[in-house]
View 1 (cartoon, helix red, strand yellow):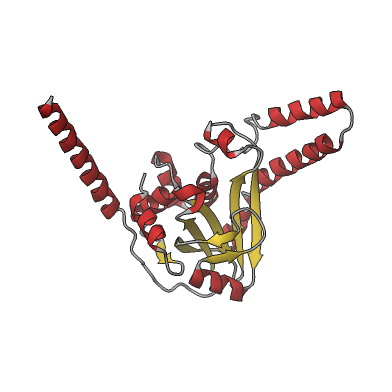
View 2 (cartoon, helix red, strand yellow; view 1 turned 120 degrees about the vertical axis):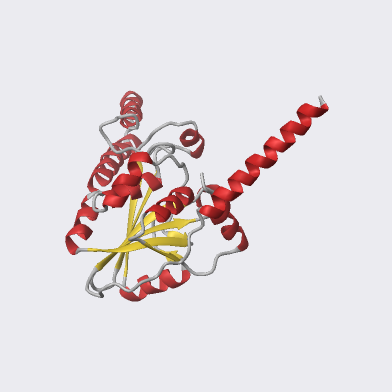
Length: 257
């Protein structure tokens, strides 16, 4: 029995050491470079302590004038418990815009201050690269299916709220439930199409490195995916946004799965 306990302790120690080695090997360093000023920019950004420490991803596009457009996909139809149980539902694609000055301030501080889900929060790390105007437009076009599903849900939800007939109200509620399971729609599913999946899908529409990464990506968290992709994609650059708290630094280091 003592030998079994000792062996178990050694197994735990080895596993912890292996995981820490993985965390160290995945640490992102700040890789800066200058890009032509006339180009647009693409940012893959993570809030390390978002979603209870698992992280939250957003995408930011910066046009030729330096103005930023932020895209953030979140669950809307389901509660947190329902999401965690694996239920899919219609999500919300929040879109916010900033002036050149506001965009520069955000990249310096990490503080995002706009209306919309996850558009008012502190963000910590970003990968970025230049894109053409055409690629900028292509990424914005990728939001259309998300917005269409959201609009369809909003129209039906309003009918359900305003309906006075009990029978008709029950019918609308059933339609809402069916919509949340409609595989023809781009639904939010916390394990297979969450905020990070949406960001990576939009990026992959213009970036071959992300397309290749998506083919074999297995990590579950935004933090883990950002770090793993950053290690593979050498043409992307990395930067810290503002000053990270102790907790944020720990999460950025430890959350690698």
